[in-house]
Image (cartoon, rainbow, N blue to C red; front, top):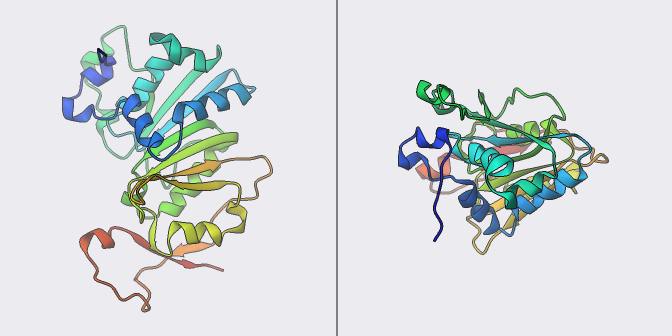
Length: 250
């Protein structure tokens, strides 16, 4: 029998906000054949820094990233060993006010939240270049005005050797026309930097961004279109309208 324990931050929120434990997020990535914590461990082993920085972009209530810090740092030796004796710095970013409205009673305890929370837009991440070792985002891209801009920002903040895992909640999370696969195939510098994986269903996938020292990627050669191209003739449902259309900018 597994007994779930929550950090002080997690305990401060209603149960319906506690649906993103580290275990659940790890399981979601695993369904797309991506081993989240194994990827993290490899990054830690390769890093020459004494501190490892992890980012949860679109962190919501912040429970997942707090759970990440808690498990890696001082709760479970099976997780802690993944740090290989290094310090852990965790950051949560979201436009939601939740991470910035942690109840005052939490700060009166000795076990304060260990994560730095920032209220910011994913398309303009307020972090320096080459500052994050490992980052992940769950189902965020479909809610952004310019998903490609967020992907560019995610790449920018990664350290060389860093990895950003983007969990896609739908096949058209980034764009309906062209598809993300087409955007990647027509961006020569994206080869070796971005890898798209789908699980058994095309409705769940992971975009893996790896920042290699040899990478020449900086941005995608596409721009947002204000309207659907005339060549597209389809029923525009509310769901379809949530997604953006890009045009080649070159």
